[in-house]
Image 1: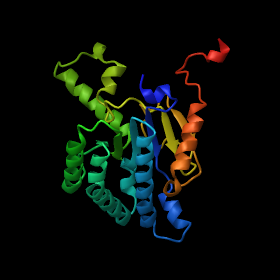
Image 2 (image 1 turned 120 degrees about the horizontal axis):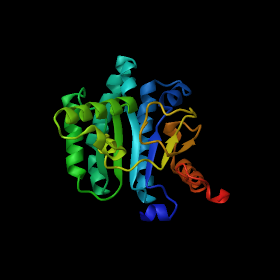
Image 3 (image 1 turned 135 degrees about the vertical axis):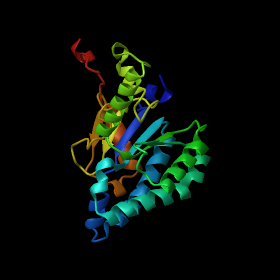
Image 4 (image 1 turned 30 degrees about the horizontal axis):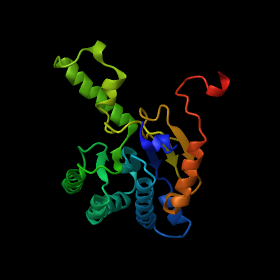
Length: 243
């Protein structure tokens, strides 16, 4: 068991970073300014998670459904992601953060893939926080991808149907080898998963705050961890209080 878990800190925290657009709208600003402010909140969250001894942080940056947004907004988000990693990769490397892309890479532009590959290669040996960025990610699409790969393996005789287990499926998920999230935080007040980590969230604890993502700071993150520390995780078993 990790030192973090022994101290009541979740080993893996996942965040649905919701509310950038609403943050901007409430200030009569263009939506892109909300996304830009959201990057600042992400930097704060990464630093906080690292300092608190959290092993893995997975953030929902761009979903497979987000492609349906206005073209101007999608283009801005792609450019923002690219520039952010170009600018921040040096600092992340200095802090020992390992970066991983979690999502479908097949329809991303060559420039985006290049910066991702460079970031992953540069930080692959880092032993600090693992930062999984769920980009072009969808939980259902992830499961479909796993099924397709398993069908291919079965047809090639690499595996038999009776040998397919939960562990087999987990080994083919985008998030592998990161363990399932202990805590999922959603900002912005909405009470739904939004196609995020559908398999991995089976026994995750949930924490929802009305705070919009650009305003989510260290105190807000701390409140989420304090709330998590009060939970009794039973994983389908009877509560210790009821035994």
